[in-house]
Length: 167
Image (cartoon, rainbow, N blue to C red; front, top):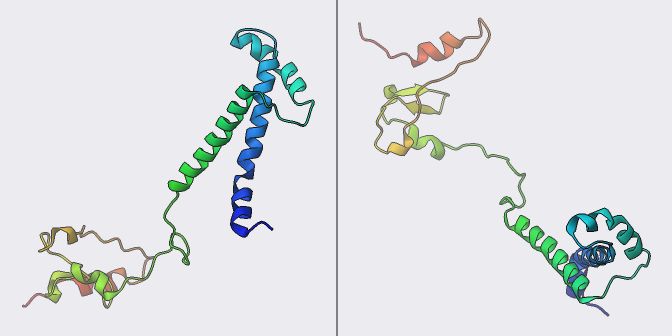
């Protein structure tokens, strides 16, 4: 009995073999077409296709077999190259999904002095220092606040973020 590895190998390569056998028919059709030049052969290719596909067996002439092997291998190679360029999927996770940020993720962007930060949420802040110690943590200081009139944009974001002035 055929083991599972051999069965898998045969099933994975069967489409390429069938395509190669069909390509031997195309090679035979090209060979049987009347004419000497490319344009003459193309003009009479349908007659060659009728003759080649009139029998269910592939052509076993060396040039036809070579064309079949070349076409089957070419499609196999294209599939393998496409597989190699596939995106790197995170197995067991939805593709493109992100995770929630943690306190450790935002920590490099927070200034130790509380008043030197823009308040984003209760636990997240962004330093206003334009030149932080680590240059890769420098970020744009613009903030877009979106909300309808009366929703508290000024009261809940702008006023708490404004620096406190001593009188």
